[in-house]
Image (cartoon, rainbow, N blue to C red):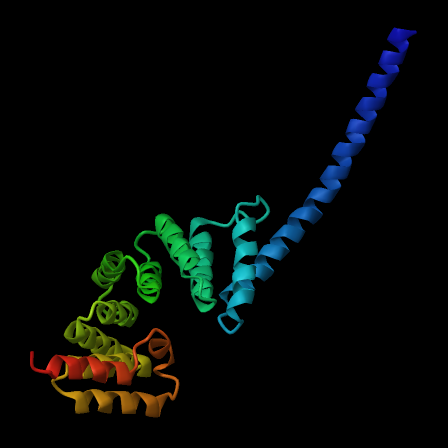
Length: 241
């Protein structure tokens, strides 16, 4: 009786097991498709810089978490790009620690990507931490492609942080020449004013930057670099000891 019961039990288990396998086989494609759809939607939101920073952080995080899923199987380039965009989104919501961490993680995947190197530089410059690492990242990006204006603009902020006014002015001017972007011109104007040797020219650079874009100075102003502060620095330098 025991043997018969055992045999029956084994038969039932086999049948149940077969049913479970069949159910999983039926559900797996649907689940895989669902996960791939989630990843695709999240990645699309992550890459859309028109969305607010907090929404991009959430979308990028979903995409990063789903990236290793077999249904998604995102490659290294995709993962690095997601981390890069999440880093930028973290900066927008003022979380510089996570922004730096994501930029560094992206760099560990793609060490010679200019955008990632620039983000490592920019995130640290915004946070005002590890400025030596920031400078090194920007300089490496320039070595790889000297015609990309972004590392010049980012290193301009590093130089402002360190009070290297002439170097900052030079970097910002290179960035502005490449893309004639008003915020680079604004940065150059700030540096020229702080240097103190030609304040009128610095104010002229700022004026033309603001003519092109009234918000050209918003980011640098928020970080504490204003025309008033630069004039005060120049005035302090001009005072006799």
